[in-house]
Image (cartoon, rainbow, N blue to C red; front, side, top):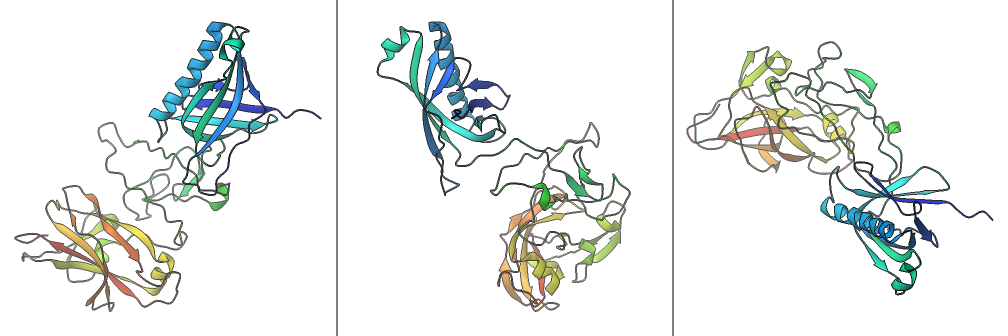
Length: 350
């Protein structure tokens, strides 16, 4: 029968290729990648090649292979690195990230070398999975549908305004746009198109795929918090309002709280959430802590609390992590709870 055609190459982030079955290099006995059921455990492959040519050409080929392995060892995470690309019979190439490798020579080195050949064994340590070529994912929010040129994203979620400037702080990825059966790394590209003077600063990124993305409202307005704060109109605030809470004591006290009803808790599915807050005035030096408390409307008992966070002067800050709700995963019709914000600073705070 017809012999199977194998494409095997080392390719770096700049698309520089080193052919392991062509251009003077011949793969002997094929390539049979190892597999693993543990996707966190790197695995090793080995295969034999013959490098043919003049002494100079052979030396150059060996140097290129060693260069690839050195580059892989120096760039084991991120966009820079080395990948092993594999394809059969001219089909689509799949790649696996290489972490290190080694080339060793056949015991008859002198015999082959004098005849313009070098027989060698190549060892590769790589990821235990294969991925296809990088593909851009269409993104959707109120500023565009299935967009691949870039969507505007804001640090508020008022959902007001006209596309492309609707105030949305998220993008949605359709399930049908993600193919394959294993988790895969992604590359997220952000461009500051606002102006040339302001740099893109503190960026917070999370996903909500484990909860109920189409129904879970992931934002709470400050002016909607209960507990007797002062609501003030401001065009600079999300929803055109903010709420000020003040304490004159030294001990920790509650700034406000939001009711999380049964539907909200059901959509959250007991997942862990980052809590971000935007402050209208400088909160530097204030310690804050978030707590889930019951009964709703008269929060008395702490069910769960986040770590205490010392705030800086930034407007947008992460203020802790909470599991919402903190019990009974995947249960429905749960009793409402209150998400409470507590603060503390010697001499008081606002």
